[in-house]
Length: 161
Picture 1 (cartoon, one colour):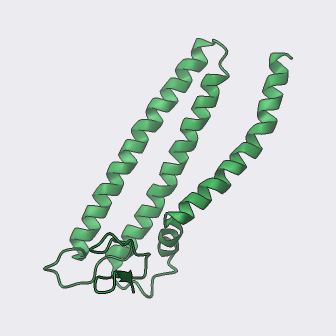
Picture 2 (spheres, helix red, strand yellow; picture 1 turned 180 degrees about the horizontal axis):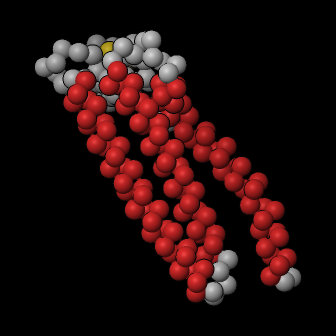
């Protein structure tokens, strides 16, 4: 089996692997509540969500989620380049640079998410006991209950309403 045969096999098997990865990634994202955030970002939850800061925060969180997924895909692609470099130092260096840059990008995305979450909760007044407003949908209740978007924690019954 020559190098060209290996490249053909890799190219033929890469597309199904990417599709399978995306299907499982979508399942994980749906399980973690990304779908609810994307509905908010798309405007499906606009009428029930009167606070524009929460709406804008949902859009930003959706964009940051997509960027995070793209960066993870870049890391996987760089790993494939590295594994198939076969001792070619240029390919190895290219893969290392891609991984380094993608990890830096992930750090920036996580920091942007944290800053956005802090800013939106501070600006909208949600989450502070003195503001008198309801908690942000999607936030945790007093006992750690995570409520989906469009609902708020009900501390009396430890559920979401």
